[in-house]
Image (cartoon, rainbow, N blue to C red):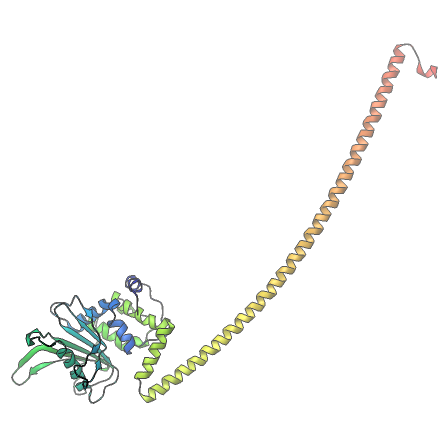
Length: 352
């Protein structure tokens, strides 16, 4: 289930990514994660206040052990989906039931009575008993003679219009009937819309974009995206289905498994192709590097040769200049000597 840091991130998040798989919140493991998890206690409070609409809003809850313990070995052990208590001691039972059956009303009353009687341990007085409120979300129609989708049952004498006690309250919410009513933006309608329609969503509709609905969708996202949670969801969905639906779900799972294998094989082929292309590109890169190195070597050799020729030319020019300078120096010396002889009155040409 969600950790505290995940919950805080969800509560503060406004960005929703599409779900990878559609998730039905009426499947029990998802339902319990939504409304029976301490990390999502704010959703449980919001749901109870939306459905019950108490005069004083419920502000504090503690999630309880979902097992209705047996008093005697021969008693039937029952497990409820969600059980919680508020500060005043009132107990809340929240159940989801996808399929109805003839003895469901007996089961509803039996689980309510077990929670009620479990309050009274040995030595306690009857005046310590506190109310037990049960809420059942039904995926099929149970009360076919009534058009209402929300029924609130109490211990009441309709002939004399008097109530025996206010400690018993059982709420039945028949989702197929709600589908036919005019929808509005009440908190109750938002929750019923979520439980009725979310199995067909990949993201939250704009009209339900509230912090609570975003948080609820993030719980669905956890079951959609995380492999372990999605397998748990699939197994519970199959276990709760009738034989025909179970067969269909198993066939769908087999088709998805084969599709996943084909996708995996295709991905592996693409990976192999990509690896081959990468190896080919690497080989070309290495060949190009070798050619570049060879060209660089040739360039270096050409530069060396050019530098050698340049050096030889420079040496030749230097030697020519030196030879010229020596000739000019010798000529200048000859002219100097001729001038000295002429000055002394000696004609060098006659002397010769």
